[in-house]
Image 1 (tube, rainbow, N blue to C red):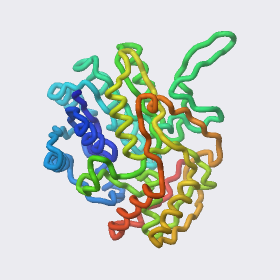
Image 2: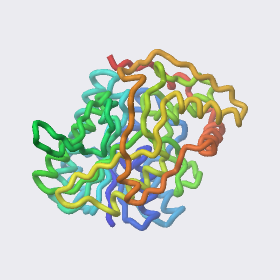
Image 3: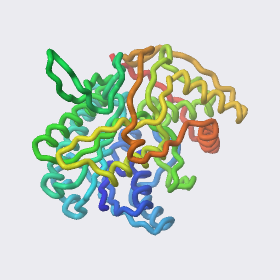
Image 4: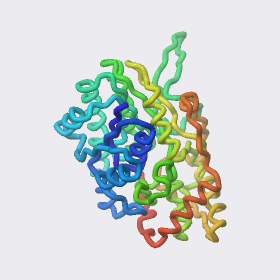
Length: 382
């Protein structure tokens, strides 16, 4: 099918583009380099130099034979949105085009406003573009498990049946996000659910856990095709950060008691979840929600796994709990359901010592590029 990837330059966007073309789909990508811009502004560049999106598309075509059209522009601007959707009328849209960092959203007022205005405006423009140009196309929006928070009951897959005073009804599972970024993701879901009801559009909302890794079946360790690999406090996911900290001899930054538990997945599983959601779409007038993760770990468990894997390389990895800069429960119940994607056909990749060893091996080759000053700055939620 014809698939448009919004945010196609990102950590997940570019690998998704390669994966979908390798699986027979016609793909175009859109980006405005917002992530690159914010990383430069905050002096938290990724571990690897990443070619611009035009060059990445050229490299992928040379390697694979698949051509990926590139659109550079701001999806907040309707004229640009209109231009893209007229030139490439999609049957499916993958929506990654948001400011992706919870810590960045809590940095200051400017960062907060950028997060709110960008994330909600892009989602709204996407909805209107689907209605105007491709009414039957499915939106696959990348949400986050962080929308749910850490309630003291099981987390259902997007919806929950409630019985109250003898009456029953199905509702969106209650959200209690832990950052402004996660709150904008809740608002995205509400916007999409509203227009699903009003206009009968079709949406799959993927509540994704933190992603780790950088090797995919498509890049085959070709470093020019690697995704962004951030290891800083603002844009790096926790396991990626810990791996770089281990190599740099920087104590692993466990926040508070380290009991914070989340659902994690390998980058390969993200690509497969997105592809399965596109190939087996939601129905018109349906908001379908999947909890997208493979395994749950506490921060302490991740730190201990990295410490153990580091020993294979002679690394003396120190785990150092520090004062938690965030407002979050450090010990809590956490039992989310995640059966929907397995039923679609997901074959999970698990976090093994071999997976961690491969990540460490690649980072060790680039050890001289690690900027220790970027690792932790203590962005406080309050």
